[in-house]
Image (cartoon, rainbow, N blue to C red; front, side, top):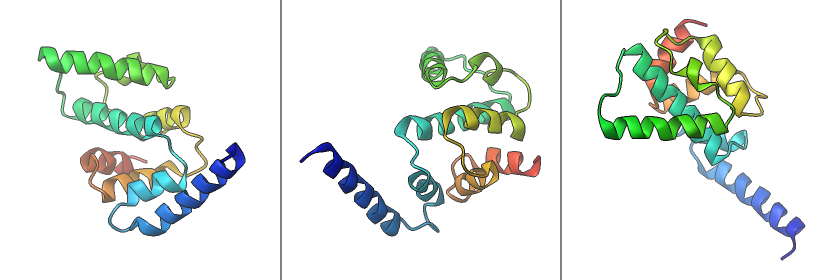
Length: 136
């Protein structure tokens, strides 16, 4: 199979997945499929929300394993173009800050609000999403 046929097959398979994924049960996955997010972009979004959650709860990792995971996350996010020094600050996260990070790691042809709503509805760091949506 040549490259063009493989690309067409993948496009068709993506359309099939979109028709199979229940947008009511899995709104973030549906959003990610619909906007052609890569694995790295999805993981980056979730990592950013996890860090925001820690910032909201004022929790710092003291466990050696947690610190090692944090270093791995920092390297991963730096590779996506994220300024990890500002991301790992102690400041309360903001909608504008989240928007900035999303613009860096995605093609961003969507409203950030709808991304947050899909994450919240799928219960992915819903407390952080709710906080950010309240402060638009």
